Length: 147
Image (tube, rainbow, N blue to C red):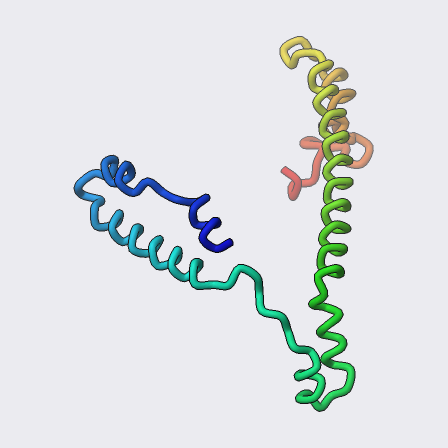
């Protein structure tokens, strides 16, 4: 598997070297060296992670239940379930935001162009621009801090 991962990410270094200007050749060589070192380290790793010998840790750890707690946290089923739950929550939240943004976009598409708007049209379209003369009767009709 490790060899297959590297094969998928292969870089044509010869073609890459042809495009590198002479003044950046040292940086290119450093990049290639670093890339080769990382590829060698990745190739040396096993295809699957080593299994954890929980019985050894149960015998070695003095605190009862601690190893069982870690085993529950590490179990792949629990990790995948939590990942699916968080992904579905993210998708639902994104769908709700997209619907809200589409409503705003429709509002902007259907509004009167700014050069043809009156002040009343502007205040109807964007209520936050309306001046509150009851709360702030003197010009500038907004607190100084908000300006």
